[in-house]
Figure (cartoon, rainbow, N blue to C red):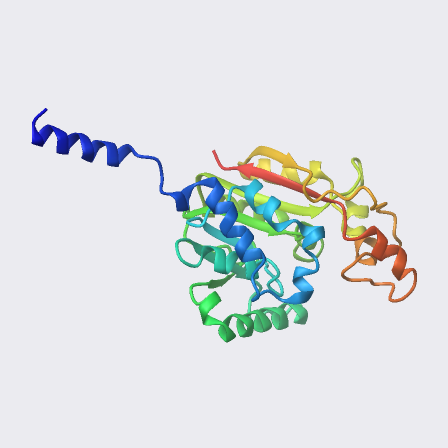
Length: 275
């Protein structure tokens, strides 16, 4: 074999070689372990890991260090403390928050301002975070069209059904922002099958069928279901709805130990794919 043919063979082998170790699922999971265990995380947030299973949830949705990801309505930043550093070097994290000038719900405006302050205080972690806003149908351009690998939303669908009244428009916006083959990951308080829409709005628990219908109408295909966030102790029959449970404890000290023993809500974990 001539030198030229040897060099050509080496070049071809390099071109078709497997991805670097940083791209492997094992190393992606190891980086996620390191991020979740990081000292940067708020102690009160870390205490909720046993209920929220961030590693299992994010890996199920298919996250990688080089993913372009949008989290919808990140609130105080529970998942942002994981997603922003995990994606910092090679990916992109869009925090699609409330509008900073939201005049309809003061809590939303204050939450957005607090999130911006949190990000500004730690540029080493959040320096590449892109803060945008979404409130469909008025504002839907929370990321460049067809640019995302993953859209994530945690415990928000009940809010859109009750307060925004445009849950379908939100799912339509997610579909538009994802690349073909991209995924939408939904974690939501899970109602019993057959629960009426009125009871879903009152209790904060949504049926899987309702969420799946929203996604499919937007154009998604159901990619799978995980029980990573299931909680069989959750009886879902509280007068004040899901907010009786931690971390809200809407009943204050009344039966607090009972609710603490139940833990956070039973949750669906659904993955949808854009064809």
